[in-house]
Length: 291
Image 1 (spheres, helix red, strand yellow):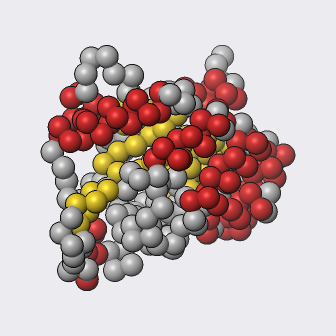
Image 2 (cartoon, rainbow, N blue to C red):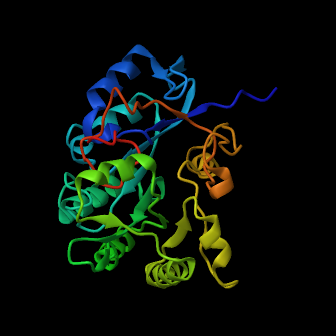
Image 3 (cartoon, helix red, strand yellow):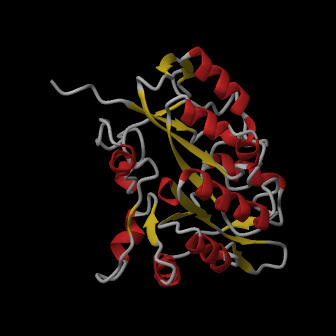
């Protein structure tokens, strides 16, 4: 008789738990259960938080500083948990990401994560690619530090980079009403295709595979010779390769599958409302429009 598949915990698409909420997270691990409020219907769901039930914890963050300093990851491993990391490292852009650490600090964190947990257990996310205008009327982007980050990722033997283009969610538009001299723009598909082809060439030089998150239209427009593929930020097939055991390989139908999301099933234990993210990124879909 085959054992029941264990669950994957996503921590979290909704907020930055490693940067701001690890004491809470560790307390819930100690209790052996998370109580998660569905952001749409407000129903409370209990999610088991023991190594018997959990195959892997996938952490998402832009700042793993305290996570590394306090040794949270090592403590979780000692308790029997497998760990995987989605580390978003974008170019230095204080207008877009006002409260993330300087780029050199984040690159040092990437090296430490690889040393502690292995580069195969880390996705580098350069996400999202943004186009914007200020009062000068010139269209800018946040690609300026891509090569520097890619060089460091290659040095750390990172093999996957996940990217996407910014989506103009309604709360982002509302947030920008207080910034009359600033606006995001959405370039045509040919421009996006050109950027991805150039990115692909840059990353291939460092043996890094480029993957697109929820960008089916762009992916379909790429040349037949492309090595770019659909992304899976929650890659249960890879988690099985890394850690063994039994877990579901089904796609997560709660995500944007039609847009090209390749994530496998997981349970997200974060909260938009009770655990606000204090990075205050201008393009963020998670934070309230007023932040």
